[in-house]
Image 1 (spheres, helix red, strand yellow):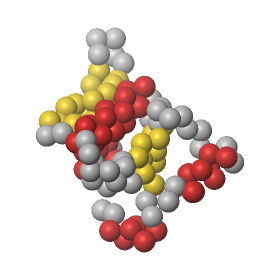
Image 2: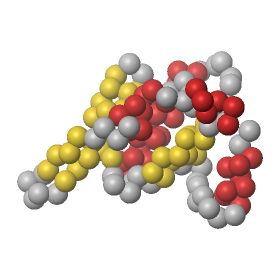
Image 3: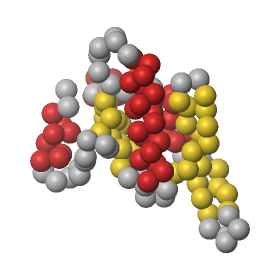
Length: 118
């Protein structure tokens, strides 16, 4: 149930667009394609420095292990500007992805499932 997300949106606490709210459906058709699109969308939000809200994404959350745990690699370019990278897995392939410091990720979890979250 995403009613809390709707309430936070209505009250202006969360400013979300369709491109920053990620949710997996329970439909068995095209599951792998949907997961890949979701991971790619979150990866794009990280690259742009936008907020991402994940709901009902338990089956792909392991793709964001480094991102959630802030296991970033810091690299400086020639001008001395620092860039942050995290490994994000798309399918079976993990790639280093740019993460802007302004990126924020909210994982919506049911209270009944909170004890099971690592």
